[in-house]
Structures are given as structure tokens and as C-alpha cells.
Length: 90
Image (cartoon, rainbow, N blue to C red; front, side):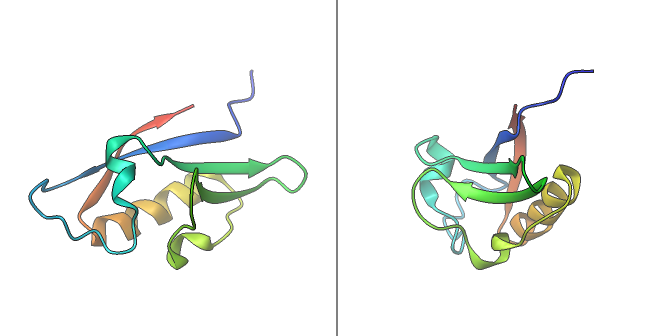
């Protein structure tokens, strides 16, 4: 079985495009200009969130032992901001 990529991009979309309030989420993630990455450190096997440019919101600064846990945490946080994960690019 092949190991999946250790740097995955979460593609985000607003539930309601008319609602522009997304909190501390960079609005450029919706245009593909600043992707939200979920990256695993191969030495520690810990997953963390990163933007291509800038700092992620404090809620997403946690560290996770699995991709699944990190994604579930992000889904809960993003749902409170009316944002959903529509795709994971591997």
C-alpha cells in the first residue's frame, strides 16, 4: 500500500456565498490564492495546519496525531464560520 501525500490541501467553500463574514479565515482561500494545507511532519508524524501565506487562526494551530482527527477538528471549526471542506487534494 502506497503512503499518501504528507501535504494535503483542503479546498474550502462558503455554505452561503452571500455571507461574507468568515471570521479569521483568509478570504483568499475561496479563490485558490492562499490554500489551507494540512501537513504531516515525517519525523514526528504530527499533523498541523498551514496557509501558503500568513498565519492560521488560533483554533487551527493545534497539533494532531492523525489526518482524520485534524480534518474533523477543522470541519467543526469551519462549520461555525459557515464554511465547508469540499475537497482534499492529495
